[in-house]
Image (cartoon, rainbow, N blue to C red; front, top):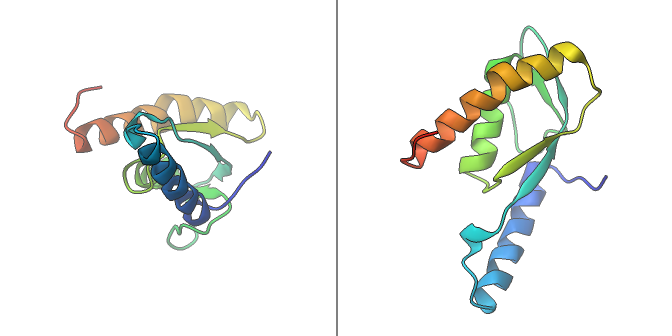
Length: 112
């Protein structure tokens, strides 16, 4: 799997945007998928950054980071690329993903 930290991947989005405009496409119509790794823990170690290799922290940290990646860096979909740990998958599906969808929709003036 090819992977870049969010800061570098966001630079790639700029290249995609420019190329789309050059051929007359609206860059917003291009789906941006980002592979996310990490673990859900009881607490976070310091602030999150765009050069982090993984999201490590409680569901609130995951929600914060994924919302930032969607709204500020332009990613539209996320692939959870972690071990198939049942607790992580359950928390991600039941808490993280719905909260991120709601926050992104609210910020964009849409309903979920």
